[in-house]
Length: 494
Image (tube, rainbow, N blue to C red; front, side, top):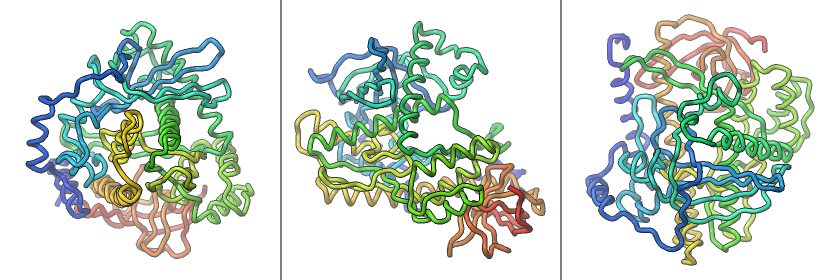
């Protein structure tokens, strides 16, 4: 069929729902979960003496333009000695979604929201994730506060966690705030309407720069990958654009990394188990060494994140246009992250890419189940109650979250590839420069350099390896399966 004669969004929705079911995910909520949802507003939690009132602070959300499930608010305060206090408010989802409830069972099954271009399958019903628990503009909400003090070097030398009621004073968007921070655009209206908010965002940016600088001194990796963003005109797919990092996204990234580290250390200090997010030592370090050698740089034989970051910084300076392609190759060779349960006193592998030892996922409980688990552990620790999960339960949940995360990623990629196949079906026979992103017994994949599209090389793939730049020809697409097939024609010039 010619997909251009059909409703693209409806076609991709059908593909997304089938992909969910094929991967064992639930696209719809059960009748029992929906019945439970109706009772939530009738049983709203009341404040107690442990909930502080922090509504007057200049909290603001900073997220994608179209985000409606707002998990975090941020605020900064300058201290007299040059230090900066950072406050991150995290939506208190557990106040409404209780352990082993019907809503919790659905969330536990899927373990995260599934974001496809045509349809979002939320981990929790939108009435919860975009309303009841979302930290929406001009609404009082319950939250968990992670308060941190960062010194001039970027080190955290004081931190605490507590419950509070907060109010979002401005819903800000990454792109417009980044343009303002980089002096490429005016101040967003939402920011200008709140006296003092602009100065606070500049202070937050300063704190984030400190945190980032110290992390990279310790070996965090300077990576800049490009994500695909599908653009619709009504229900018709219009284009596939590149969505890149910017300075506003960096503020939130740096604050969330810091908050997730504090969360892990807080639980450990209280003698509580936790679920950690880890990225182990790269299994294909030797290939990363080869890539560096090909760029006239020598990495040590054994994995070394600081040496790798030095190489990445050098390459970004030498060839900024192609740096995202190198970053993508390194990301693929580092391997996927995973969740593991940790008991205080045990030694977790840490997160190689972030150069941090203690790292939990805690800042997105509306859309990630490990964060909701962590929130329940935090609240139990704050209230002096026993841990709601033992080690065996956490180990089982961690393994389930890792496995299901892989299924979620595959659904999202399949829909993205189906959309790309739809856009590329008229370009069969064209040749493109590409970079190899995967090479194993399962197959060889490349990503085009001109358009953020990934496909499989089904002819001429012998000898290809991750990071190699090649010239490929598009030979076939399959909208329903999300297949984009290439054949290698030659080695591309880097």
